[in-house]
Image (cartoon, rainbow, N blue to C red; front, side, top):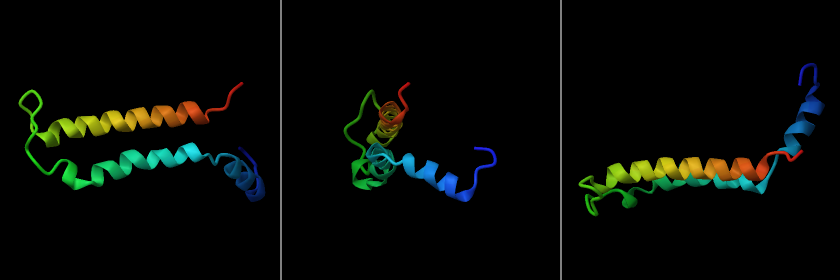
Length: 76
């Protein structure tokens, strides 16, 4: 918003709050749980757990972001 004062900007930011945004913490917190990938088995196509789980974390992040976007975008 060009030329908007601090009060108008705060009002716009307050309208953007949605409980769906809390879901975005999931792809941040899950990769920090080290016991998930601190082992070498099970192997998938010969790759240790660490490598294929990193790809799974990427898929989790994309899926979570997509769900939050779809649930919070403004309908016309």
